[in-house]
Image (cartoon, rainbow, N blue to C red):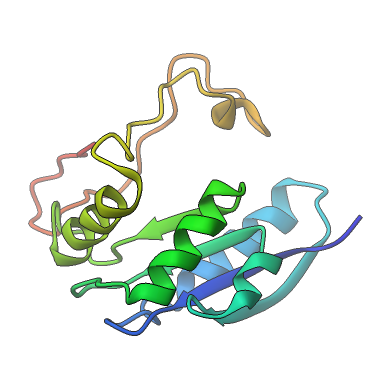
Length: 153
């Protein structure tokens, strides 16, 4: 079995290399909670590169405006339509912040208005390694940075 490897996507328009803790948190959890063989070295791959098609898991993050160029847009669409997995993280905990809004707009431009949907609580993702009988747990941290202790969708 090949080792899982974490790929961070580099894109031209914004601050793609935010939150340096995320890769190590995911990799540590995979080692701690699963039997999946893991390559603990993060890889960085340009979204415009054909290397993306060798990466089964990709992470994209930022705080600022996301505007894919033609090659990035084409690669992103081809990657996802062919079964690639992308974990998108706005890193700044702002509800509807600039990264989140512009990334969602990119998804609408590429895949149509119904591209992004909330994952239902009974999705198989929530029973792959752990069983969540009622629903997936919420984060233990408030998600908007304003100290209101609200947990948002």
